[in-house]
Image 1: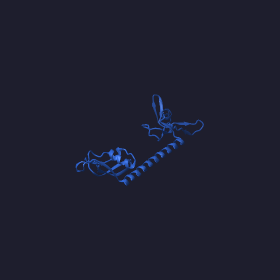
Image 2 (image 1 turned 45 degrees about the vertical axis):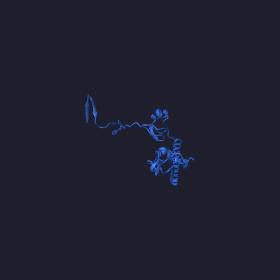
Image 3 (image 1 turned 60 degrees about the vertical axis):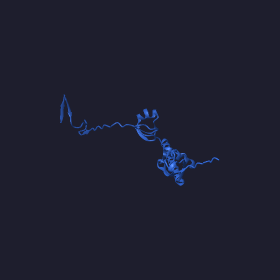
Image 4 (image 1 turned 90 degrees about the vertical axis):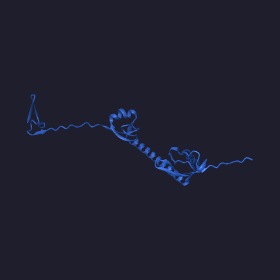
Length: 195
């Protein structure tokens, strides 16, 4: 079937070429291949928004790697030596985190073993202390007995305004919390008699 369009004929059947010497027909198939984009495996040397974080392996277009990432120092080619260096760095960081957690657990155990820290305050009527006990006072009491200085922002203490025993906690690590008691005692004052 042919269709006429402005003096030309268009066929709706596939293109076939006939051999002049042979009587059989050959069919010619044309395949269109899509252009394949070349990609390069790179390792990011620092965090880059929209691409990834430091140490990640990414496959990026070769031109993007050559013209931008390499030129600005954002990435390196992912070869065996760079991958090994990143693996060793991650292992060292993991060991350091595990060591930090182990030290925090050991100090939490030490706080539990000691158990009670005494703070002496001036007391008025009905065992009410003058002022209140602050986080700084608790941190100083722990430092006096253990020799370890802790961040004041990591403490959780109740409102202490009278003599007694109070339960307190301190966050030593994101996964480790130490619990201990604080005993508020009367501060003894010496009175000197005049003769």
